Length: 271
Image (cartoon, rainbow, N blue to C red):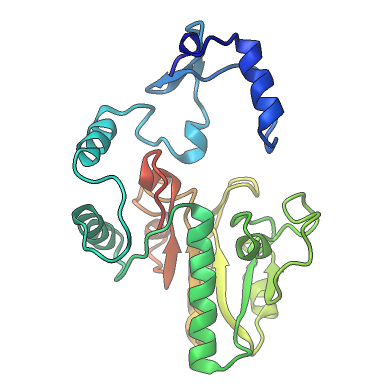
């Protein structure tokens, strides 16, 4: 939709947003009316270089013709259904993802936060089912980011940041250790710890890659202590570090990995 089709001026549209929408981000003072490749365009045709890439989503560029064609083709067949029937795209994509990244199963989600919530639930259920009701604690990294719903927000190691401020108390069972500090992670492990969950490259924490020694050490620690190693690759997954997933560059396989953003190419898809 173009601004001229609404009968509104640019300022009237901005005023409408400010009146009716909850403010979560401070807006840039332009209207993104259309996009092409690496650029956004406002209603006057001014081009803006899109360094955000839709916040790590549009890895194929804006309005990639192959992505658009795939969406249009699917809309002609079926747009949405419930969980019970088999669907062709689900099956084909599940196999392709598992074959590409060396995992066994996939569970589809709508967003990265939901994918991380799923990993948290999976880890806790694994711990409780196999070791008892107290084995549900998870260690994550300080300055990490895993989302803004309660489980993911509790896993986010920023207790004094605005992400958690105003929403406490957080869910119990989470502890935070210094990123790239294997000894600190070891010191936080107790008899109730069931998993370690990190980003292979911290995103909002400042783009800090994990060291090879750290990743290998976490894998060994988890194996020794009967714990799960969980990687949050919502921001790093699908080619952002060169390999399909960042962990593949380390040669270390997690027990579960979350993905979103780039895997959907702009559609609400995660796993």
